[in-house]
Length: 313
Ligand SMILES: [Zn+2]
Image 1 (cartoon, rainbow, N blue to C red):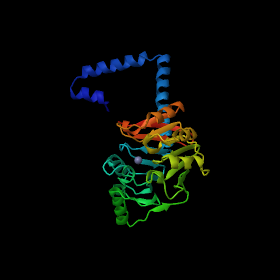
Image 2: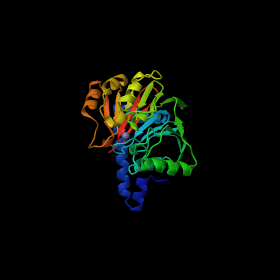
Image 3: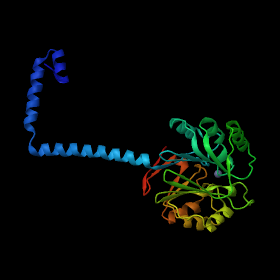
Image 4: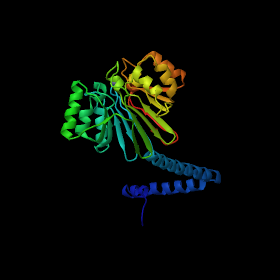
């Protein structure tokens, strides 16, 4: 005779009286099930089953989704875009603040990135690029066409040399397509700017289905003007990486109004959380603004809507 776990425990203890009690109790319980209770149990099981199915649908949706992660690297940029088969990193933070990014890339299997875009050569954008190249590498590397002079830029150049790679210098608008994503890299239009490094920023406009995302590097007033005047892409986007860590420029208002994003991310430190005026303009536009100093931000989009936005820390 096979015993249930309860019964085996009773046998082991030699307490057949207890077993009888359990059996009587079970009998009583069985008798107590009236039609209403049975219906309730049925509904409960149905709801549990439905939740399980929903979870499966959610997981399937997320596998197909576009994931954008804004890492908390202080007042600097490190933004990872992932689709089902492709990864793109836009900037790599400072030399010393890339650990969260690197540990995430390791967790994902340490595969080389498909694309690495260095928007410009300030230390808060190119600083961690040598570590990324050494740890995981990148199949294709894009950068603007000018020479940097910082120590971090030289480390990036050395890492490229070690990897035997040449970056692509973006001088004309470059379009990439992957997993339903259309990605346009818009280079600086002039050879010289008042703000040498920042205004050389590559700008990335990306669409996935009906949704659009703009990563505006550290553009200052001259480059913002170029963005306002260009005709290669529509400036209206659903999500904006706010230019230059939320610093107010002469034409910030016009630019932010033209983009008019639902979600804005300011990559900044607690001490310098962007200018009040920029935050106020975004507020007036009804934009939901997030700050990386409050933690790494992850957004998941399907081609139609924002599925989820989360902030760690
Ligand atoms: Zn910067």
